[in-house]
Length: 357
Image (tube, rainbow, N blue to C red; front, side, top):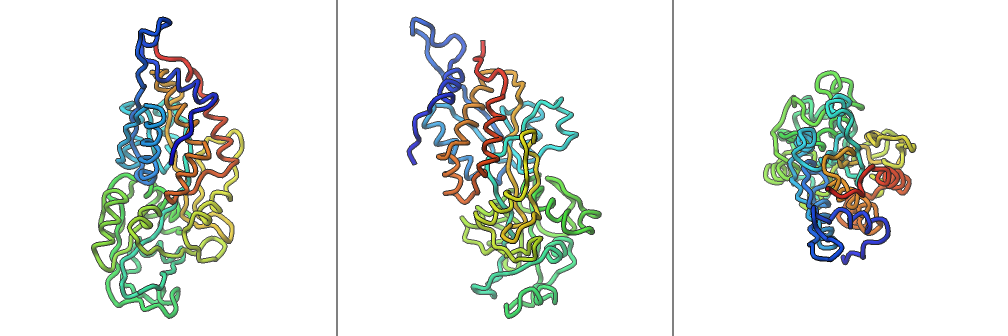
């Protein structure tokens, strides 16, 4: 996809971002040098971020070096000030925000979904169906065989094999884990009491895999496994995904449409801080394990030129072109009303147009 020229406000912001100290004087003798950025965090949106950052570099000359280390690592590096921005699929807690003196804004970028993928050749083309209680009991270790009567009742006529059910989960701090455990926290009192919700939890059972990539590989290689990964990873690896029963009682397949329906169920207003959970939402068409993913930005950035560069990228990220790339890669774009709130918040970033001295 060819990127359009950078128009209007974005172009003026970018101009301030790319002028290096002492560059570009009135006599034209100085050189303009791009203000490059570093970020780290979520693996959930990494395929999209990788594409966005490559396209953005070609269009602007600003390079964004992003390390896909998991949301827990992204929050930690952001709090330590070792990156220009963080990225997370789970929002920072009130305690974490207090630890940085409130100097953080959460900017949602797109909407993704956790899916349950499995390796059961015996099923053929049949699609597994799970309700909330079954999902919780599988990951609590209460359901240990694929032909458990509860699974058989949920899947009439499906040839569930008489074999061990092997759970695979994330071994690293992960926003994907936050989304999944946030869902389980809402639908299972036992899970809420025993395990809780966080980017990293003490799993009652299962094998660990690092990153969405690690869980995907474990499931692909070991028959009888079930694990949670981001929808994009399941699609790109041609993995089967379960239909999950939502709050309205419907078994819903994870699609762009059902994920967008989940986001549409969560109301926001102009004062939102965007830390909105959309797991287990109402609505017959809503997929129940969906979430926004966020970039973490310090509005009081020590380097105004870098803040200007971040602001310029955020402006570009909200364009129909960039959100269209998200859709092409299997992510749900921001709903128009949410994109409007984000745009207003980006425009309000203070000092972003002031280049570094």
